[in-house]
Image (cartoon, rainbow, N blue to C red; front, side, top):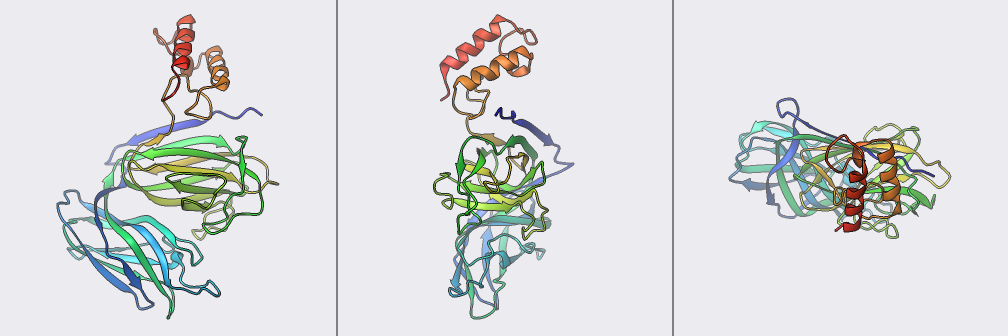
Length: 349
């Protein structure tokens, strides 16, 4: 089956029109235990030059005292935070903010806006609510607090298919593996050029069920639970009231860190489908392997094989820009073929 080519759209909009939340300062936070009565901590920032519009938290949520029998409390999806700036202005996380509807430890990497361009210098008070009744206690470990300011507004979009010729047994959350496989998936490996809050949206053209998972650092389809950072249900049962056929979540991403966004077929008995994925945030999405060589025209990016030759010949016949590799631009002739062969022979780093 011929796979559709990925369609990618990049846009950089003026800051006066839109702004995505960018990390402008970070400090460590002491570990905190949050009982039913709540808890608060203070962190101090200095040398912050940009106006602050929001706050983010990274680290690990954990159930310090948890319901190991029934698995009912506490849930990270019910964990909330209110941030009070040094000047008195405050903003609170939405509900649900992030999290898993289980007692499993959950990676924190999320934020929210709502502050009116405040001065970030000085002492901040962070008030936490566990969302669970006594005697259950939630906690944050290895926490980092990040101030957010107005950054650029960049959208990366691509259209692909789950039909990629490889399959796995996908997770159904961060704690288990689905029994509906094996099923096919598409994986996008990338970094971002700026640290900040990014919105992920995946829309399946058919409106049917699907599932997307964000991995941090590495992805191994034989170990589907390892390195999960966040996920979005695409079956209409998301806690964020997202319709069937759409998978969406927000995540705090850091410059220089590798992420892998996997878009998965829902079940082996569901058909493959076209999907359009969008990543929106303050930085450019830098896809692994993309642009490493002008001859790298076909999936998988980052490797050169016969599929790239076929893609070039197809583009050359259609006089597509991808095959216009030599001067003069706009003229398709033997010099473009020579340029392709030279680039193909050089390989990808």
